[in-house]
Image 1 (cartoon, rainbow, N blue to C red):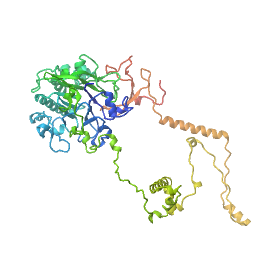
Image 2: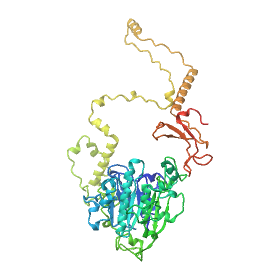
Image 3: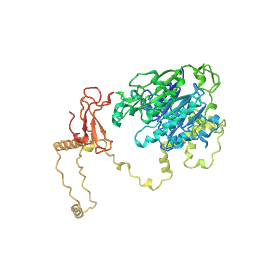
Image 4: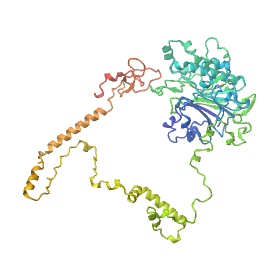
Amino acid sequence: MALRITTWNVNGIRNPFGYQPWRDKRSFEAMFDILEADIICFQETKIQRKDLRDDMVLVPGFDCYWSLPRYKKGYSGVVIYTRNSKCAPVRAEEGIAGGLCPPNSTTPFRDLLEEEQIGGYPTMEQLSETEFDAATLDAEGRCVILEFPAFVLIGTYCPAERDETRTHFRTAFLKVLDARIRNLAKMGKRVVWVGDLNISREEIDTAMAEESQRKNEVDHVGWMSSPARRLFNQLLVEGKVYGERDEGREEQILWDVCRDFHPGRKGMYTCWETKVNARPGNYGARIDYVVCSHDMKEWWSDSNIQEGLMGSDHCPVYAVFKDKVTIQGEEKHILDLVNPPGMFENGIRKVPWSTKNLLPMSGKLIEEFDGRRNIKDMFTKRWSATPLVSSTPPAPSKESLSPVRAPLLASPIPNATNVSGSQIIAAQTSKQSVSKSNGLKRSFSSTNPGPAAKKTKPEASISKGQKSLKGFFTTQAPKLEAPLQSPVSSPEKEQTATALLPVPTPSPARTERSVEDELAASFEAKKSWDKLFARPVAPKCEHDEPCKTMLTKKPGVNCGRSFWMCNRPLGPSGSKERGTQWRCCTFIWASDWDTRQEPR
C-alpha cells in the first residue's frame, strides 16, 4: 500500500481511548493500524513533558517528534509520528520562525549550519510586520516541521479566535507561517501542510456562515475578507480573494487536496461543537486540511474525511500518495522520495532502518526514554553471570541465632541430609517472608511487650456496631438491668444500702401496634430524605422526552441561571425546529419549574 498521511485534532492525546474502536486495545500502535496511516499528525495533545509515557513515545515501529507548550501547561501541543518501515525524515524542527533551539543545544534552528537547516525562516522584515517576536510565537507548541527528500511536511495547530484578546496573536502567527511557506517555495522546496488551521475556507465549508455574517453584521464579501480567511485563500490556487492581493502574496502556491477530490460536496465538516451536541445533525465546519504545493496536485490517489471515527470533537482527515509520481519529468516510487538516499530503490528497501537514523528532535532521544527502544525494555533487567547465592551456606553468626531468628533456623526441614545449602537458605527466606506477612505485629508485641499491650481491652467489650441500614430506623426496647447486689451482710446494712440505690421506674409495656407505628414513621422520614436528595424531575419537551438542564454562562443579568431545554441534538440548520426529529423549542427556566411535581 502507498504512503498515507493522516491529520487529527484529538483534543487530548488519550481522549480517543474512551471511544470505539480505540477502547478495546488502547494502544497507539493499534490506533495507527486502524487508521492505516504511515505519517500521523496529532494536534491539541494537551500534555506536558513530565506526563509523556512509554506507550506514547516508544510506539513499536514508529518514531515521533513533539512540540509542547513552554509556559501554558496542558494546552495546545503537536506531535508527528512516522512509520519506520515506510519513511524517515532527514531533518526535524519545532516552531514556525526558527527561534527555538534543538534538544541539548543553545543554537536556534535558524542559526545552525546550512546543511543542518530546513530553511525558509522569516526575515527580520517579515517578523517586524507582527507585534510578537519569534520566541513568543513558538512558545505555545503549535508546529512541527519534518523535511523529506521530496517535500517539507508542516504540521500545525493554528490559534483560534475565541475572543478579541487572541485576534492579534492569531493574525501574527498566520502571517509568519505564510512567510515561511512562501520562503520555502522560493528555495525550490515542495510543501505539504496539514493540521487544524481553524479556518473555514468558503461558505461551503461551514454550516455557520449565515449565522456568523448576521452576528458580525457583514455581508459575503466582508466575511470572506476576514484576516485569517483572506490569508489562507491568498495561498490557495482557486482561492477566492476580493480586492487587490496583499503585497508579497500575489502568487497562489498551495492546493487543497481533500476539496480537489470532492469539489462540490456539501456538509464535508471535520469539527462540531460538543456543547450543543451538533455532530449527529452535522452542524459543523471544515477546519482541518491537507494542502500541498501546486506542482504536487497529481501525486495523490485519494483524500477524504473520516467523520465516522469518534474520539474527539474533530474527525481525522487523510490523503494517500500514488505509488509512483512524476518529479522533474522522471517517474519515481514514492518510498524512494520519503527516505534518505539509498535506503529504498524502486520501492524496495536496500538499507534497513536503524537507530542511526534518529534525529535530535526524536522523542526516543528524550532523556527519560533514551536507551530504551520499546515498552518491554522497561521491565527487563540485565543479570550478571555470577550467581548471587553461594552453593555453600555461610556459618551462622551470633546475630542469626537471636531469639527472633532462632526458631526459623530451628524449624525442621525434611531430608535435611540431602538438602543443599542454597535450598536451606531458600527455605529460610520463604519462612521469613511468610512470618513477616502473617504476623509481623504479633511477633513484635510478643518479643517486645510494651505498656500498650498490657492495656489492651478484652475482645468481648468491643461493640459489634450496626449491621444494616434497617437497624438505623428500628427502635429497640430498653433492656432492664438486674438490681444491684449489696455486699453488706447484716439486715440493717442491707436495708440502708437498698434505700440508697435508685429504684428503677418500670416502663409501660410496648404493644405490637406501637412498634409498627414507630417503624412506619421511620420509613416516612426515610422517604422524605430520599426525596430531598433525589435528582430533580425533568420537564418534558415537545417530543414528550425528559429535558436536560444547562447553565447560562453568557455575561448579563441571566449569567449563572439554570434552565431546561430539549435533549436532542441540533439539526443541520443549527436552529431549534418544530415538528422535526431535531432539537425543539422547549425552554424553561429552572426557577420557574417545580422539581417536586411529577413530569407531565
